[in-house]
Length: 102
Image (cartoon, rainbow, N blue to C red; front, side, top):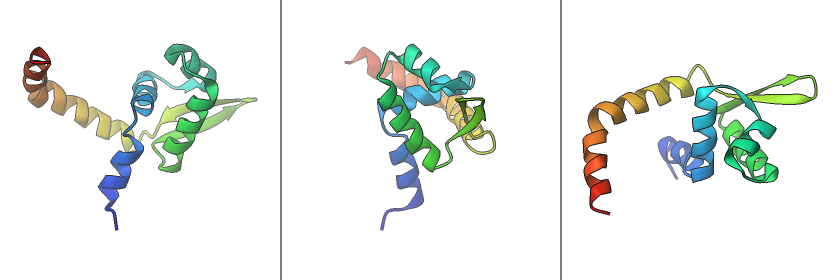
């Protein structure tokens, strides 16, 4: 049986989902806005938003006929803040050094 952290990170493990999360980290957006900014098919964006929604990583609100997507403020935003802090203070030198050797 797979543990919770494995399943959680598996949901985040695609490049497209990471890009969607990065956009939503900046501000809430509609599917159309995400599609335009990432220049990807709307069906791919919707499919990936559905996967992120199943784990409550992404929330949606209806505004008329439009759904506006945002990150879960209680759990995901604090996790991303912590990841960014960790990266900027502890990973950046190591990651830059590895980039030089590619």
